[in-house]
Amino acid sequence: MPDRAARDTTVMVLGAGINGAALARELLLSGVNVVLVDAGDVACGTTAWSTRLVHGGLRYLEYGEVGLVRESLAERDRLVRLAPHLVRPLEFYLPMRTRWGGLVSAAARLLGCESLAKRWRSPGGRGSIAVGMGLTLYDVLAVGSRWPRHRAARPGAAGLPAVDPRAFPHAAVYADAQMLFPERFTVELCVDARRIAAARAASFTLLTHASCEWLGDGSLRLRAADRAREFQPAAVINATGAWVDRTLAELLPGDGRPLIGGTKGSHLVCESPALRQALGDRGVYAEADDGRPVFVLPFGPELVLVGTTDIPFHGDPATARADDDEIAYLLAAVARLFPAVAPDQSAVVQNYCGVRPLPAASGSAPASVTRRHMLVRHAGAPLPTWSIVGGKLTTCRSLAEQAAREVLAALGLPVQGSSRERPLPGSLSAEARAACVAETAAVVRAAGVAAGRVDRVAERVVDLFGSRAPEACRAPGALPGDVPPLVADTDLPTAAVGFCVREEWATSLGDLVERRLMLAFAPRLSLATLTGLAVELVRLGMLPAGQAEAEVHRSAAGLHARFGKTVA
Ligand SMILES: Cc1cc2nc3c(=O)[nH]c(=O)nc-3n(C[C@H](O)[C@H](O)[C@H](O)COP(=O)(O)OP(=O)(O)OC[C@H]3O[C@@H](n4cnc5c(N)ncnc54)[C@H](O)[C@@H]3O)c2cc1C
Image (cartoon, rainbow, N blue to C red; front, side):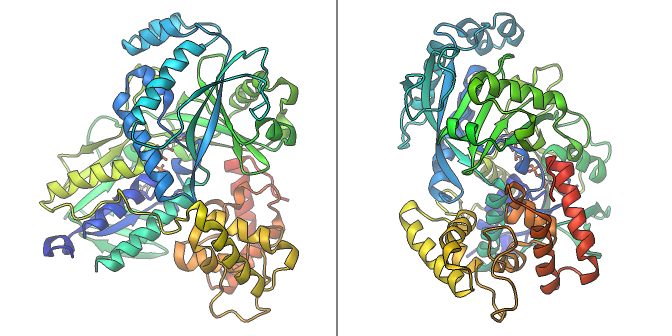
């Protein structure tokens, strides 16, 4: 049990992205109370706009970031074990044009001479010798895990991505992992935070769509859903990612130099059966003409995710959008790799763009800015206050562990628990999956889903909720015939809406579509789907009936603005 001091201590974490949520969970493991606050919804920031990889970061080796790569590889291993339903190993095919290219520029980069590295960059990009050396070091740094080692591959061989073997006559295959839905991973961190709080008699409050102001006496006023509450925390942690400086400007005006030097990165979601087939089950990690990495990734059974760019960005991160040049750049990179099935603009069914919360580093090339995270303490604050700078999806847990240790030490509290071996609530091993799908199918069948669709629905719900899927399909209190068994034009039970509202803090149509049920990426998302969800929100008392139509239009407009997606 937590000691008395921890039980009397409340820490406020601003920002419920992957890092803020992981930190809230970690602090609760040591018995302190946590108030987690987000100006929007859980995971509505950069977490949702990433490439969705859990990786060591092969390319960081060139910048000498050996420690970061080692930490990331250890976390990759851990996240695949602790959240196997959300983080899955993915093999990558790495095509190369040359054998010897890139050695000199890699050496210059390792020595910290980015400008020379650029000048001496080989026109054919990094070759198989330089990449092979990097992959060997990658394998060495992953020592202790059971991941397969990299291997050379024969371009054009059956079963590999059908990248043009004439243009890319060398290739290697190595393994990393994919977190298809970081949004759901973050929601599950919050679900776990609530479970930990209940088990330790601590309190966990999550306020979304909330604003926060400092009241001078060390207390903070939070406004959420037209209700204001005051808290007097023992410490505040600004985990607002790319918004860190904006948050500081509001909370501690004049606190000092900017901490963040964000760069924006864009992604395309393509619906091209030919490209999806040419890709197969592996991702492709290649070099664009300017030397930047480009990922072409399977994104579910029908879609392909392509990213990304790296462009300095100084505006409000919420306004970052993929521009036409970025879309053309990414399409050109795919066309060079897969000329026979190159998608055109019409295959780009949506796009998205996010801002990396990188540390401010004036004058540095975006790619060379460290991807490490750090905790910055603000001396001038009325109570112990820190900001988190940087961080990746991959290192959210280790970042949380390090930050919690520092905060607890400053508050004179002991570390009393760790997430190192703690599975996420929906954790479901490959061996246990079949039984969970069968149990979910039984619940879905009992709810009246047509026999021919039961299996597909069960698989889909297990993909989203892992071992919590059967529970997600039950509608407590609903009588047969109360609601249609499935949300229109989807493979999702209507009961899952209530589950997300009851158990996962969903309050709006946007929360459901973009960050709980992940319908924002469903190729057949329609206005009928949005209407069905809105009707269920009305039935659950979350939305006044008179506002349902406006909410549907607001959600569709949001999907168009943020994803370039047209819902009809
Ligand atoms: C293009 C791109 C690709 C990436 N790819 C990968 C990848 O493949 N793998 C990987 O490991 N990492 C990747 N990253 C990095 C990773 O996505 C981010 O570092 C990570 O998501 C940051 O999480 P966060 O919780 O710190 O910030 P965010 O997810 O941005 O969360 C910050 C939260 O703070 C909230 N907020 C803002 N202002 C306030 C306020 N005043 N009060 C309260 N709340 C507020 C926001 O609403 C938001 O929800 C990528 C990043 C980008 C941009």
